[in-house]
Each structure stands twice: as structure tokens, then as C-alpha cells.
Length: 158
Image (cartoon, rainbow, N blue to C red):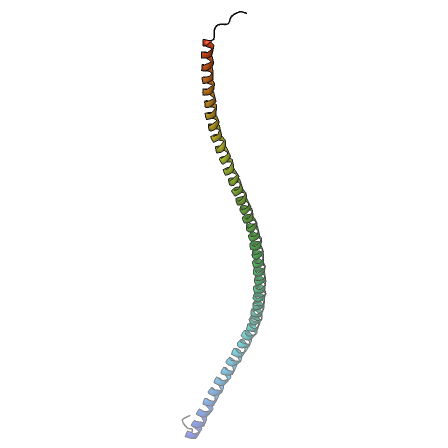
């Protein structure tokens, strides 16, 4: 464009810059359209993910409720078992108390029997002493009878 005037050159330059700018804007529009389409696809996919996450949240809430219910049932059963065990332990304690009472009575009775046996033993000792005294008297009487017999004249025939 050597023969063109400065105004023509500026017009041509301005037209070229406009064409380049328009090409850039067209490409940007195509790129933005593609990005918008991809964002739309991603948004559609994320909508599905959000739905799935909502379902998972619902499932987790249901599971939590189920687990809470189970734990409540287990706690109630444990309480029932504790109550039953406490009743059994109370019953066993009562039985042991009854056995202790009976053993104390038995021990009292055994003490009385021991005292009676000791009394009988002591009485036997006293009886032995009395029997010894009686035997000594009998020995004395026998000795006297032997002396008396010795002093008597022999029997004479009638």
C-alpha cells in the first residue's frame, strides 16, 4: 500500500484490527459457548451427585435412627438383666443370711452339747471317786469280816 494515503492506510489498519478483533471475539464466543456447555454438563452431573448425596444423607439418617433404636433396645435389655441379677443377688444374700442365722443357732446348740458333755465327764469323775470310796469301804468291811471270822470258833456240829 505504498500509493495509499495515510487516511486509507489508517482505514485499512482499522479494518484489519476490527477483523482481528472480530475473529478474537468469535473465537472467544465459541470458547465461552463450549465452556458454558461443559459447565452445563458438569452442572447436570453435579445435580445427579447432589441427588445421590441427598439419598446418602437420608440413608445415613435412617441408619443412625436404626442404630439409636438398637442401642436403646440393648440398653433396656442390659437394664433388665441388671435388675434380674440384682434380684438374684439379693435372693442369694438373703439365703446366706438365713444360713448364717442357722449356723449361729447350730453353734449355740453345739456349745450347749459341749457343756453337757463336760458336765457328764465331770459327773463321771465324781462317780469314779464315789465308786472308789465305796470300794474302799467294802474293802474295809471285808477286812473286818475276815477278822471277825477269824475270831469265831470253828463250827461245831450240832
